[in-house]
Length: 134
Image 1 (spheres, helix red, strand yellow):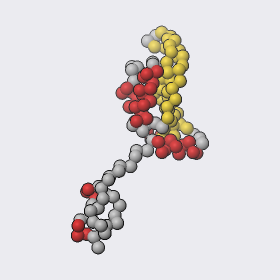
Image 2 (cartoon, rainbow, N blue to C red):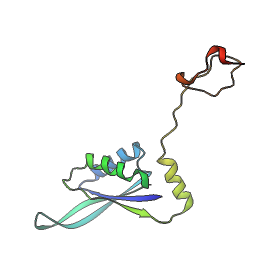
Image 3 (cartoon, one colour):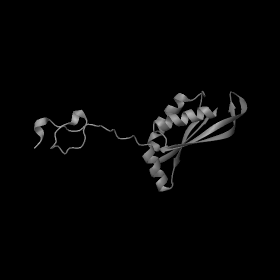
Image 4 (cartoon, rainbow, N blue to C red):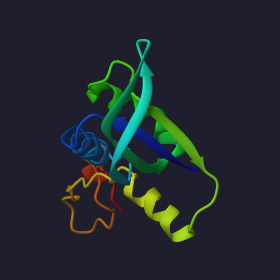
């Protein structure tokens, strides 16, 4: 399953910082930053301010972590951080989201020292003992 995250922030710089952070951590695959005008109630008054909206695409299983990370960086006391389920979408696009939010596999870089060994590269804790080869 896939979801869209929606957030609003006060400045474009904050929007870029938040998007780059979530992209770097692979919690989202994409972030659109949209200048917007927001009218809302805050502490008993109606406010009319310029904000920046972020629309971010991710896998549903990553939503909670993305919201937690975003809240930690956000400048607002009560930030708008919500998600919406993506019921359908272009299959190729949804696969792209999956690929871009997957953690890269570690590249161990270890090789078995024995020439006769055909084992794939293994971390040091998974190497064969010298006498275990046939």
